Length: 233
Image 1 (cartoon, rainbow, N blue to C red):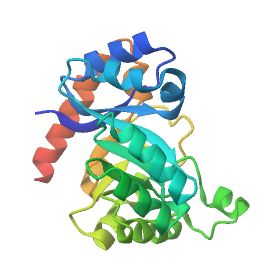
Image 2: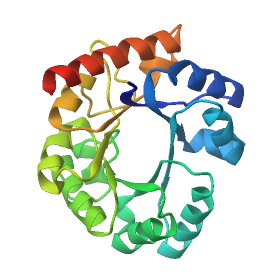
Image 3: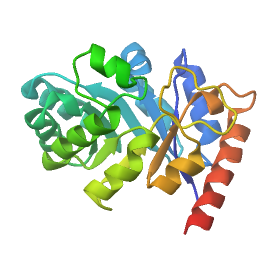
Image 4: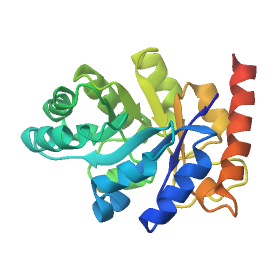
């Protein structure tokens, strides 16, 4: 059974993205295509990454604009049949609702507070913190607007799970195996910690894709995640 991991396929070119996706697909449930790769190659990258793999595609575009524009964008990318599409919860209720209505067969995941932001940075941009409080406010707004999933750091998972209940999927970037480099992430946790807190899908990128053998790295992390689920269950 594939582990609940979305591998961030942040490759510099489409051939590498396809190779990484094929390597990790036997071990994980999802591959994630981000803004940089999508803007470079467009819809072609979704088809290429999906390939013959029975793996879900998470399109992480973090749409944030007026409701009509986001609705049009969501409607267009929904034709590619991604399983998940991200929007920024900070766009407001009407914007999130517009995305949900425009892409009814895609799970709209609302991004709460980026994992690269800490409390000091939130203050600089004028958002009332701490990050945990900001994430709760944005999560409540997004769920009221119909979002089927939330993107939050591992630090907010437990509280948001208690707030929104079991039916909203919680997706956590900022997941790093023990000993891995934090990179540009400010609020991180191990896969085991994130699952124990209530996460449904773990976003992991560089610890897998920068490994000498991405397939082997994905298999190793997936095995640890499945053991953790078994113990937790």
